[in-house]
Image (cartoon, rainbow, N blue to C red):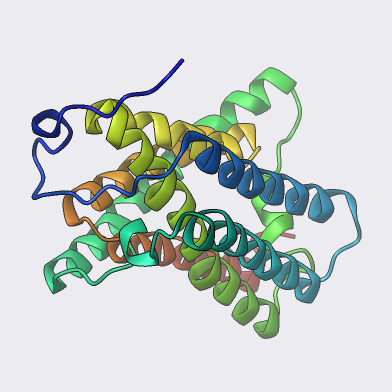
Length: 249
């Protein structure tokens, strides 16, 4: 089945002359598959191997490097589409404020969703449930070195790679053919599923929608990268604060 771009009047509705990158479906599929494989592989390695904070930070950083390299060779170099057309361009300062506000709003929403999912999965399994992100982000408990490393990997490196793939590439491609109304939840669903953690799907879906909305309105990846990074930073800070206080054994 051949996908045809929406007419310009429809595709651009609600935006100011959006410059959607003319990537091919195969390019998008390859990059999303690489990103998904990296996310699942790193999750499996951390879950099933004896890991240290340094190893987790190294794996997360390597994951982002591999994903960005895939974008570079398949899209930027392979198709001659610059990083700017994928969304890595400046945004007006007001969108930086909007990004920070989005992150602040997302934190309580996601916390409530995670609590609800934890309760549901605990009720279904009839056994205590432990959030897999705790083992992922703090495999050896609290330490300042681990805290700094996780902040770097989760709040800086990871958001850049994920926003380039799931908003700059996937969302832009979907937007070209389906319009914003369908593309925002669809790209968010792929983003949530790619992480491979069932209990986090609702929270990741909500985050994906908010980040896609930021990109849609600002036409820059900078605001969603800021929002994504701030959200992850607040989660890491909260987790390590709880560990330092001794509330999590």
